[in-house]
Image 1: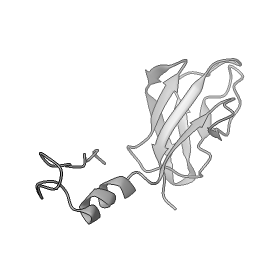
Image 2: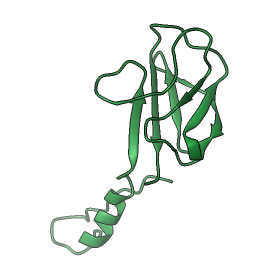
Image 3: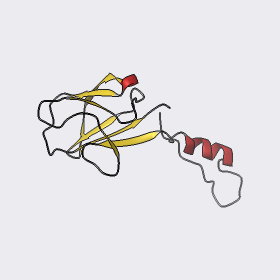
Length: 110
């Protein structure tokens, strides 16, 4: 899903921007985005061990929308395989090691 920016108009109260309803529809489109990490205290926690053997992980919300997941390994973007979006499972092409940093952003369904 593409990001839709809210049109605020040219000057205040000139009726050229989005309506309240249109603006909040754009805001609500991002209601179900989430961030997981391995070892992070402020995000959801990924399911899967960092042990240099495991390549398969699952997101904390239990599912993700296909095509919405982005993976970062030691702060660098990484390609992953979307193994089973309905179950939240994805796979790295390598096995991250203990102490490595993994962050995942994704959209999920309720």
